[in-house]
Amino acid sequence: MLLSYYRRPLFLILLLYAGGIVLFRDVFVRPPQALPFALPRCGVPVEGRVAEYPAAVPGGVRFTLETDKVYGRPLKTGLMVYARSAAAASYGDRVSLLADLEAPGGAEVPGGLDWAGYLLDRGVIAQARAVDLGVSGRANVFIRLARRFRYGAMTAFETGLPPEAAAVLGGVVLGEKKSVPPALKADFQDSGAMHLLVASGSNVGFVVAVVYFLASKFGLKRKYAGLAALVFAGFYVTAAGLDSPLVRAYLMFSAGLCAWLLKREAGAFHALTAACLLILLAAPRYIFDAGFQMSFLAAYGLIVGMALWGGYVKKGGLPGNAYGLFLMSFFAQLGLYPLLALYFHKVSLVSLVSNMVLVPASGVAMALGFLLAGFCKAGALFKLLSFVTGVFMAAFVGTVRFFADLPFSSVSVASPSVWFIAGFSVLALALLHAPLLGFKRKRLYLAALSGFAVMAVGPLTGALAQGGPQVYKGVLFGDNNTCSALVQGPSGGLYLLNPGMNGEKLAASVFDRGARGLEAVMLTSLEEKNYSGLAELAGRVKIKTVFLPYGPRPAAFRRLLVRLEASGTRVTRVWPGEAPEAGVNIACGWEDSPAGYTGTADRLRWSIGAVTLSREGKNARVEGEGAVTEAVKGKIIRI
Image 1 (cartoon, rainbow, N blue to C red):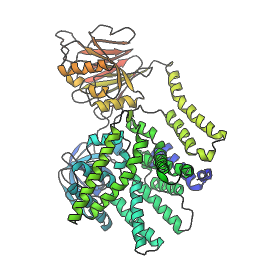
Image 2: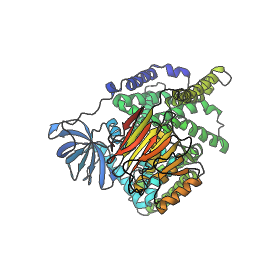
Image 3: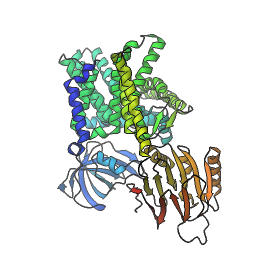
Image 4: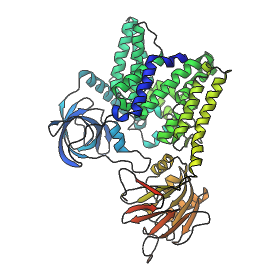
C-alpha cells in the first residue's frame, strides 16, 4: 500500500464521480416517475416485477415492486406492496394486482425515520395495499434456483433449531434478520455485532474459498476453479438478496480474478475502488445509503489498515493471533463511529473486544448453516447437525448477550456535526497511514493535530452563534391522541412539551438536534396520553426538570416521578400564573377559562423565553417574536 495508490486514474475517477453525485444530486439521482393521478386512490390495476424477497409483516407480506403498467398503460416506477400473501410469487417474478394506493407516511417525530423519504431514495413513489396477487411470469432459472436454496435453508433452520437460534442463523447466513426478536437485535447492537446479522463480504469470501478448495481437490486448474468459485458466489449473492455489502464483495472478488487472469496487479485496494465505481455507475443513489457507506468504509479501513500495520503483528502464537484480530476489528470499525452516531445515535464501547470473539464464531455458524441446509433431507445426519448447531448457536447468542449486558456496553450519543465528522475522518486517515507517513516525521502529527483542530471548529462556531439573534426553533408533531412540541432555544437547550409518544423515538429526536439531554419536560395536563413515553425517554436522555400542573396524579405516574427525582431530575408542580423558579425562563398560563380545572384536561399554555406553546383545538401552536416553526412530515400538527 503506497500513497501513490491515491493518484491512480481509477481512484481519481471514483472521487470525481462521487463528488459530482453529491454536488449535483438532482442530475444523477432522478426521482421515480410520478403517478398520473392524486393519492389516495382505490382499485388501481398494477403490473410489475417483484424487486426483492417478500418479507413477513403483521397481516401478510411486504416487498418492492417495479411497475411495468398502471391502468394498463406503461409506467416505470416503484411501489411498496403490502399483501395478504405473496401467492407463491417471489423475487424476480412478474405479478398483477388490484391495489389501493396511498402516499407513504413521513417521520413521526423530529429526527425519526422519514419513511416517505427513505422509500423515495429507493425509487419507491407510493404504497400499495392488495389482497391477492396473480403471477403473470416466472423469474429466470438462475434466480429460481437461488430462491429455492434460500427458502430451503430457512426451512431447514426453522425445522432443526429453536426459533431464536433459527432467526439468528438466518441473519448470519442469508442476512434475513426480520425474524430476530427486537430485544435480541438491541443486544446485537449494544455488543457491536449488529453487522453479523447482515450478509456481507465475509460470507462471499467463505463461499469463494470453499468452492475454490473443493474445485481444486477435484483436479480443476486454477483458472477454472476460480471461475467456478465466482459462479457459485454469484448464486449465493442472489439467494441472499443482492444487498450492497454482498454486491461490493462479489465485485471485488470478480475484479481480483479478472486482474489475475490478465496477469495484472490484483490489489485489494484497486478491487475495492473498481467495485465502488461499478455500483455507483449502475445506481448513483447508493452513495446516500447508510448500508453502502458503512460497507465500503469498513472494507477500506480493513484493507488499508492491515496492509500498513500488518507488519507489526507477530506471526503465530496466541498473543500474535489475538493482536491480529484486535487490529482487524479496530480498522474495520474505525471509520464507522461517526456514521453510527449519525444514523443510530448509539456507539458500542465493547465492539473492539466482542468482535474478536464473535466474528470468528460467525464463520463457524456460517459453516454449520450451510451444512444444515445441504443435509436437510439426510435424516439422522440432519438431526445430529441440528443438535450441534443448536448448541453452538445457544453459546453464540449467549456471548452476544454477555457483551451487551456489560456495564456501559454502549452509549447513546448526539448527532455529530459536519465539523466533527470531517475532523474525525482526517484523524482516522492519519492513524491508518501512520506507518506510511512515518512515526518520526512531523507530517503524521501535523495531520493528527489538524483533525483535532477541525473537530474543535464545531463547538467554537456554536459558541459564537449564541451571541447572534435570539431565535427559537419549534417543531410540532404528535399522533391521534397527543399534541407535542420540541423547542430549541438560542443557546441550544431543548424543551419538550408532552412526551406522550414512543420514548425511544423521542430520545432520537433529542439526539438528532445535537443534544444529549432536555432542559425541561412540560405537561399540559396529567392525562396518561401526555406522559406515556416519559419513562423510556428518561432512561435514554438526561432530563433536568419536569414541570407539571397541579391535580390528581395516577399511582403509576407518582412512582415514575419518584424514580426520576431519585436520579437527579427536579419535579416541579406549577399553577398557571406562577413563575416555576428563579433563573428559569419558563412560565405557564390558562389555555382558556380556568373554571373547573382538575389537571386532567389540556388547559395549560407554556412559555419558553419569547415563545408560547399553545393549543388550537386538537393542534399545537408555536408563536412569538423570533420563533421559527416547522412541522414533521407524516402525522403533521398543522399550524
